[in-house]
Amino acid sequence: MLVTNVGHCHPRYVEAVKAQCDKLFNCYDFVTEPRAELAKKLVEITPDHIDKAFLVTTGTDATEAAIRMTRRVSPGYEIIGFDGAFHGRTYGAASAGGMMGSKAGYGPMTPGFLHAPFPYLYRAPICQGKTEEEASQACLEYLDWVVDRQSAGALCGVITEPYQGGAGGIIPPKSWMEGLYKWCKDRGLIFILDEVQSSFGRTGKMFCMEHWDIKPDLVTLGKGLGSGIPCSAVVGTSEIMDALPAGSMGSTNGGNPISSIAALTAIEIIEDEGLVENAAKMGDLFEARFKAIQERMPQLGDIRVMGLMGGLEFVTDPETREPAPDLTRAITEEALKRGLIMIAPIGLFKNVIRVAPPLVITEAEAKETLDIFEEAMEAAVAKM
Ligand SMILES: Cc1ncc(COP(=O)(O)O)c(C=O)c1O
Image (cartoon, rainbow, N blue to C red; front, side):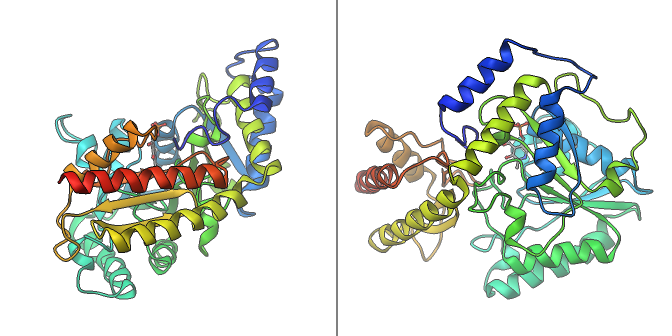
């Protein structure tokens, strides 16, 4: 889920990885052909302003690397993150994030991170009673308040997910994302976009940033990049990457030939099999059916879909919007009984089901998935 983008054991992928195993596993500091080819490919498929790539292993590594790069090339050190954000579990990444589950019980976080509200339209207090545009504007205006109240005058960057995955698949308004980018650029700050989850076709575009008029300085990639074999990256502008002192970034396993070949092949499969287009098309099918289900069962309180990324938020009553974690878990259990694996509930209130099938899902498979989901929801609602 969110990782095996080209499906489990795609023959072309398996063959390419096996062939690389006969040649070379790791070359640490040396440039190998697969590493160079992958870096080149990433620069080729990302928007034009991006022209450098640094390869690591996990999404968290990519977050840490982006934070290090931002601080290394800036006079300041403070970075603004968002409530509900998830960027990884190391101390730097968890500190940048806004999920208490990654922080509580682990002692002090690292200093130098400020936090602002994310436009969680359905639930964030700052968004209630407002139209989407008003909520977006209120969140943007709050940024200055955050800086006034929390900053020691050493700001250098902003980090955000394009949509918040772990917090419940929360998709921000376009005006917020573009407004945040502008706010950041007006202040000379580095804009880091965490596309660890949202990249490689997931949202119906190769990269989620392509939905908006923004040019992030650094973009983190992971999860589906290797489509099963660990591989992650930071891609960015040469303005930042070339300003880093030689040897300041490095990784023992980052860019190893096996993961590089896996990632390269997965990208080629995504391109050759039209999987980005498939994600957009299947996403429309999922969204339409979820809306029909919601008409019959209003306990499906909020539907958030972007390509093949979905967050379904369940409530006991659509008026009060009281979170329904028991119903949510019961739906996943009923689905499992019927042969559909849905990951354990996510979201800030554990009342969201994540929808993130492999990008290779066919129309027939999507319909079967939706039939089982609807049946499972009916059964769970009847039990409550
Ligand atoms: C948006 C985002 N950033 C970073 C990470 C961390 O990636 P990893 O678990 O590979 O370290 C994740 C993982 O869920 C994620 O969704």
